[in-house]
Amino acid sequence: MDKNEKLLEKARSLTEGPGVYIMHDKDGTEIYVGKAKNLRRRVSSYFQKRDRQNKDLALVENIVDFEYVETDSELEAFLLESRLIKDLQPRYNVLLKNNDAYPFIEVTWGEDFPRVRTAWRRENPDSRYFGPFVGAGDIKGALAVLQRIFRFRSCQRHIDLANPRHFRQRGCLNYHLHRCSGVCTGRVTKEEYRKRVSGLCRFLSGQKKDLIEDLRKDMEKAAAELRFEEAAELRDIVDSLLTINQHPGIDDSLAPLNPQTEPERGMEALQAALGLDSLPRRIEGIDIANLMGKEVVGSLVYFLDGVPFKDGYRRYRIKTVDGQDDFASIAEVVRRRYGKMAENGDEFPDIILIDGGKGQLGAAAQAMAEVGARPKILMSLAKQEETPFLAGRSDPLPMSRRNKGLKLLMHVRDEAHRFAQHYHHILRRKAMFGEK
Image (cartoon, rainbow, N blue to C red; front, side, top):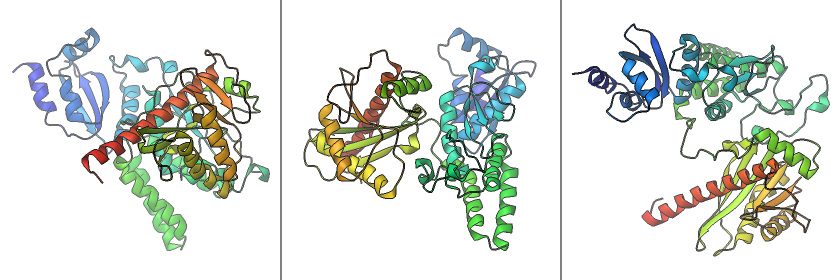
C-alpha cells in the first residue's frame, strides 16, 4: 500500500461533519490548512487518483500525514481556518500572505454602539479586527448567521447618546427581522449592547465554550433577581450557540448572483443619477415568475449597501390573480409588502425596483396609492433594452450602459428574477409529484 492509499484509508474514517484539516510534510511541518463541510469527503479527495493542476499536485506529493479538528458548524470551521492559517503560516496557503487582498471582520469598538462590517485594511486603531479571510462572500454569510444570534448593527447611522434626536421610535427592517437590537430606537442601553458585541468578539476569537458558560451564569443570576426578560434573551443566545449548526450555512444553493460592479461605486452613481441627498443603501427588487399562467409567484430581494442581504428576501405565492397577468401579480406583491409597511409606519427602502417597463411600473404605482404607501424612489428596469423608468415620469431615465448605477440596478433585477424562478421551480416540482 503506497502513501496515498494509506492516507485515503485514514481519511475515510473521518466524520462527515464540518471541521478543519491540517496537512503535514515529512518533517511534520504544517504545509496547508483547509476547511470542509464534510471532512471525510474533502480530505479523501486529496488522495484519490485524478488529474490535478501543477500547484495541487505539488501539495499532494508533499503530504505525509494530516490531522483534523471537528467543529460544531461550517461557520466555526470557517473562523478556525483563518486563525490557524494566521498562526501556522503554512507555505501552501499563499492566498492569505498578502493581507491587503483579503477581507477582515471589523468591530468598531471605539463607538458607543459598535458596528460590525467587512473591512479590507486595519485602518482604525479603535476597532477590533478578525481575519483575514479567503472569501468575502463567506464573510457575508458568516455575519448573516452571527447577526441572528448577537443582533449587532451593521448600518452607518451615527448614534449620539447626548442627542435624543438620533433615536427614533420605529426600528428599521433589521430590527423587525430580529437582526438588530434596535439601537436607533433607544430600546437597548449602551452597556447591554456592548455586552452583546463583546460576546460576538469572544466567539470570533474561538472562545465559544467559555462564552456559553459565562452566559449561563448571567442567565441564572438574572432569573434569581427576577429579571426574567433579560434571562430569556440570554437563554436564546445560549440555545442559538449550542445549535449553530442548525442555522443556514454560509454557502448554500441559494447563493446570490455575483455583482456586476463594485457596490459602493454603484450606489454613488445611482445617487448622482437620481439626485439623492445620500447613498441609496437599501434597495428592494420585485419580479414575477409563471409558466403558462400556472404556479404564479412573486419574489422580493433586498440589497443593503449594494450587496444582497438574503435575510430580507421574501417569496409570494400569488393568490388573487387568475391566469397570466404580470401587472396584477406585481400589484398584489406591492400591496402585500408595502401596505403592511405603510400601516406600521416602517421606513421605506431608498429605491424600489420593478422588473419590467412602464406598464409594470404603472401597476406598482397604482397599488402603492391604493394602500397609502409613499415610496422614496419607485422605478422599473426593462430587460433587453435595459431602460430605467421612474414613476411619474414618461421619459426613461438617461443612463449609459456603462453607468455603474445601471449595473447595480441590473444586478438587483437579475437577482429578483433568479429568486422568483427558484421558488417557481419548487412549486412546479411539488405540483408534479404531488408533494405537500
